[in-house]
Length: 172
Image (cartoon, rainbow, N blue to C red):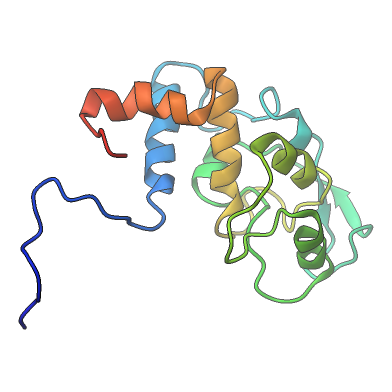
């Protein structure tokens, strides 16, 4: 097949979707390597908004039909999208509540800042017990908040100084 246009240069810059996930995972594992957190440590000390979670009795239950979570959310849950939060593709009370409070992972990026977003997410129950289900998306957004708080500075600054600059990733 022929391609029109000039060949791609070695320093060409282009967008690749969902690359924040492996980059955030590397940043998190560097925190593990430094002894700041272990994979099975609770995230509660850094994200108290998500402590003492309640879990829906069933995925389509009303938001008041909950039970206490048996386990806290851990770093491992965030890295494996098993935190109890995530995208919901079918209509349910939880999905409607996420859309209403701006925490749903829709086609457009959220307009909320990280602090407002995590606060609003903390107002909602989990869809399932941490570690007992899988849902894409929100776990890695929570991971971004966790990394920022652990680094005690904006995530962008931490990633730049800890990963991108040392690796020569000047356009990332």
